[in-house]
Image (cartoon, rainbow, N blue to C red; front, side, top):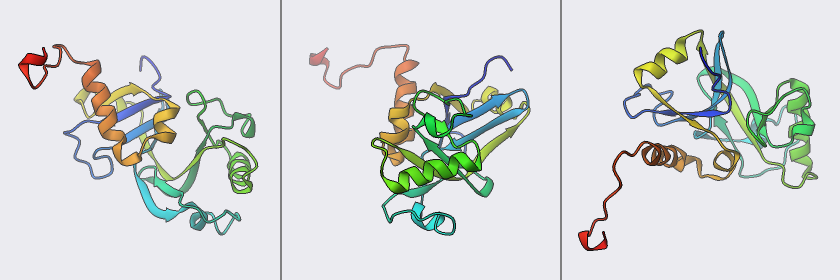
Length: 189
């Protein structure tokens, strides 16, 4: 492995037909010699966060839903958030994006969100994650299954998750364009 992909998006290539990853965008949370871990950030479920957390937290009824983070450990919950002071042990994945690195941090973040006392607090709750063993992700990258782009908190929190894959593919097209785009009408040239 040459460079860590932590804080990058893995954008599923059009040829990747695995139902777990078809047209997904994965935020890489950890990447090293032992493997990689990430969260699929564009697969909202129909389960409300308040329902998923009801056995452990009093969370207000909102439209927030749990995202399907990947096929590994589907019953495990993860939280992405923008409040680094609530999880001082964890370094940011990218600017303004932290992952609840422990049960205590998860609890602090969810309780702060439930209380509504922290202005600007953004969270996303995920069920499960994506994982790769040593060398597995590198093999998939060399096959062309994934494209890599730097991630950013704006697209993570504010882009409609159903449009995120298309948006990232558009970024890739613009980034890798060899010839300029041509207008539909030659008179506009």
